[in-house]
Amino acid sequence: MELFRSTLHPDDADLVYESEERAKTTGLHDVVHRIIRPDGEIRWVHELAQMLPEVNNPDLLMIGSVQDVTERMRLQQMKNDFISTVSHELRTPLTSISGALKLIQATQLSALNEKSAKLLNVACSNVERLQRLINDLLDVEKLIAGKMCFELQLQSLKPLLEKSVVDNSTYTTKSHINLVIPKVLEKAQILINEHRLHQILANLLSNAIKYSPEGGEIHIIISQVKQNIEIAVKDEGPGIPEHYKNKLFQRFSQADASSAKEKGGTGLGLALCKELAESMNGSIGFDESSSQGATFYVRFPLH
Image (cartoon, rainbow, N blue to C red):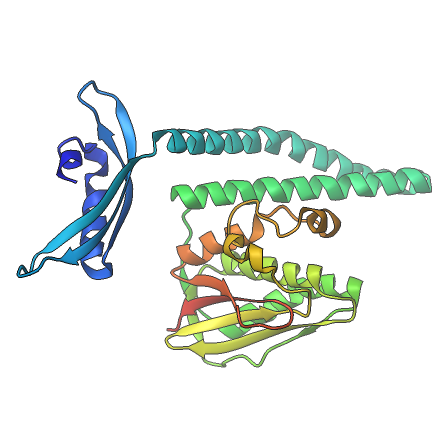
């Protein structure tokens, strides 16, 4: 690794140092950073190593490999730039189209025949769907880049959950789904951003509603797990396919393309939830032992 220390890009020195310090505790050094070649070319490398104690020596040795990942990083940057550009370029015209359609809905709907009114409603619905997709895309990009800032406040859990349940209960009536409200720990407090927590819960609840059978039940389960408050959403749907479990929180990942077309969705919701939860010092996951339906949970430190 010393070869790369002499060519390390100065802006990445702290990143590499922090990884080496973590490795003394975790045993794993895993970092992607830039190096500057003698001809001035900048390359990206991935250092992956394990810290091992040397025989008869208390010092630690780093044993591993260094891989050139420049092309991979370039492709990733191109993809991110493309997503960001498309998102921003689409947002303004979509806002204009949405405003025009809503104005027509509010003032001219009664003058339209049944077929035209139906087409107008479909157009409004599709524009709203595209707006949600673009907003989710921009939110994910900002979170990954560390450019989204929001204030965390210590808040009581009970009113937060009550508001989320009320906000999402209207969606359950369409499929006659029963949303079972939990018994909340009365004095539980968590350090979060209220709007972003509601965003996470809205995603988890909408997924549960989407995949629940008509007349089914969705349970919100509140529990204390060590020093964390866990908010779990359990449905009675088909559950999570085994082959999809390791892709759940990746952007644009969907268990079944045909199912996604039928149910709707963009594959961004859980990726966004993961970034939001981690930005608030929390975590998100799912219950792998669940034999029926799916159970997703989000955890935050108890205060």
